[in-house]
Length: 363
Length: 202
Image (cartoon, rainbow over the protein chains, first blue to last red):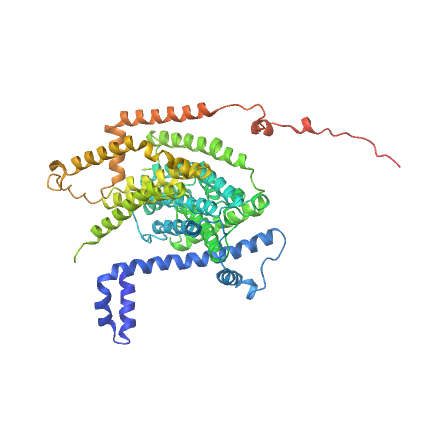
């Protein structure tokens, strides 16, 4: 990939006869330039997906409620997210008089930074990760656990009741579901024998079914079916999406930690929330549904399969929101601590016993 | 090349770490102090990454930054801390705190500046072989050579956990807690009685 890009630049700048002069200048910093280019290649499509995910959400929920959804801006309303973005961009960012000025702006940054940083290790196709590191899964867990600071800092710095209540709810909820999430991931890394996300995907491409052309039966979702469900539901809770959105709880605390934010500061929270949704959908696809692998033997593997799987999980997010009423707070805590945590602990034992038994299929 | 990239990174991370650690004790606002502690942890984790201990570095983030400090922040934000009251005791306790601080500094200087600790005394560790996984090596060490200390430590933690729950567990009499098992076990006939009756004329 790197050589192809370099050849393209060489061809392009040679049209103007500038290549040699330019290369002498760029060569010492080329690795840095190359990484920055890859980051841009990940983040620009991600931000576009976030924009159109908001559009898709409004459309899907509209159809589910027998409405039309946004259809005024551009053909079929397709320019709606652009218009929304422009509106937020030009709005004034208000700072409440009693707010803690510095931290008030650190909050949104802390919300979006981990949501973007976690993408560094996600493999989009075979060998297609920005950093294919050994402890990839663990790194993702670390980054997603950082996201909570955005909510807490924003809630506290606003110096107002509703944001603070929202932040308190958020910290308890996110810490609780992180445990179930981490335990579900322990099962995945046990049977994959690796923390590297690319290796986890490759491990799912092996097995009796994969050899016989039905790869989707070799993926992790069958032996880990309860963990697959626990992970995805915890992911929904972790991103504070409906039905776990007591953090925002419009009918009780208006919009939780985001009450006092306007303009781009608010947009940052919004971007972070949707980037996190896409991240959870991507990780579920990578960890349990074979990432870039093709479900059947006669079709080639590739990024398009990952895109299809991510879209499916994102649709589930929207479907949940249109279907389920909001959980009560004690019900959320009960589900996290009394249902998911024991279930994951039991399943770790089951998988461990399975792996030392003669019927071990995970070699 | 005056300084290679790793060395420069080490100095940057260390400088931020030291400043953040200083601010933890000097910050006027306790919430700021906790956030500076988070920053210090983050930079310490960066230093460990430079030492190629990626598992420990990320574990530091997951455990301390992701869980422990969140609860810390949670508590500190809810406490009604009066800074004036806290400051009152400063001069009164200085006679004890000052000598202890000096003692600790002297001890650290004695250890760190000793001949047995310098870069000459410590051999440079061999470069890890290709395919060496820090995580695997740590797992092997913990679950084979150090299995008993490891399990003892976990049991102690579990006991502490249960003790904390027991100490705080008081059943309130006006508790409005619901029992989900009972709610689910409800049958229709317990709640609703369907009566069949002929239609009535007005």
